[in-house]
Length: 184
Image (cartoon, rainbow, N blue to C red; front, side):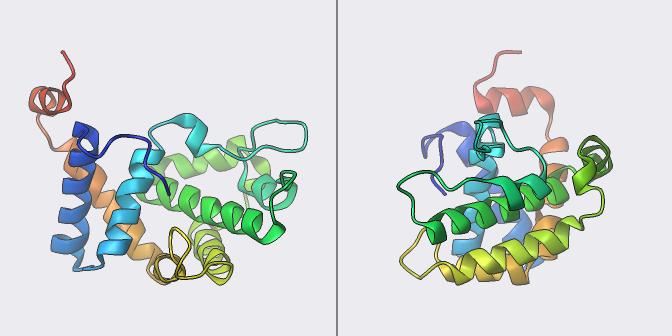
């Protein structure tokens, strides 16, 4: 995952601090590769186009997991296994993001996207990360080992993101905005 915000950006520092505290201190998950991946996921998903990067053959944005799994066309010139890896990694990211940060939104997402109504987000995310890891090597970014760990530790990572959200909600809004360089 390529972070879209520069390394020294206040949002990068905020997410790094919150994720490191949640995963290292509160959960005891001492895996720098996994923790770095989760920080990058939060940074990447700050932009809505990165939450929904997949398109169907007509160019329509895919917002349902069921559509992502079945209708994502392989772009011309892209090897099929590379595209499948990207799609499954993204499904894992998407389900982890919503399950961990906004679990109260899952019901609304399922009602809004009827094809997803029967999907179990954690199970789907675990499976997608596992498939992406099988299509990866240790030279790919992220490496296969990180994707395997995300699959194996999906529920713990989702809980870690819940702790991240609690951490940012507990911050004083004035201090929070000042640290991000936002005028209130």
